[in-house]
Length: 180
View 1 (tube, rainbow, N blue to C red):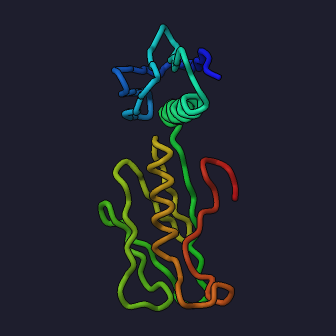
View 2 (view 1 turned 120 degrees about the vertical axis):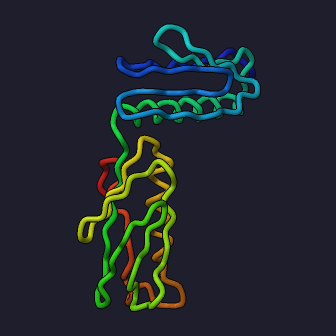
């Protein structure tokens, strides 16, 4: 059944939003976020301090797309107000692991006693701080911060060994303030 649907997103004070077709630019005290959305069958407009996503004859497909775009825009606004932070813990039992950040790459040295360091790519826009055995990743884009944290976890993935015995690695302990 097709019907008219719309979703309204409130813009808080101190946040500036520009909508140009499918491109949304959000600016605030923590920086700037920009994203291009695929708006087939949807309308995106800014009226006053609200962003309206609508469709005159929406089906389930358009409703799902509307909800996804609304969630992305809310995350963009939230990231501009306060940065997203991921915390990771460096765990080792025998060989001490050291993490060194060089530009847009992190070198994980002495993992399981390996001679060559493992590398984790750091996406642009993510800030990485290493303090002893805790890695803190901050970014105003939730996807950038999450990808950087995932890159650290996948760089220390162990294959061809028993995970119950070899529990070394870098693991996410908190996502955006939520303990795991």
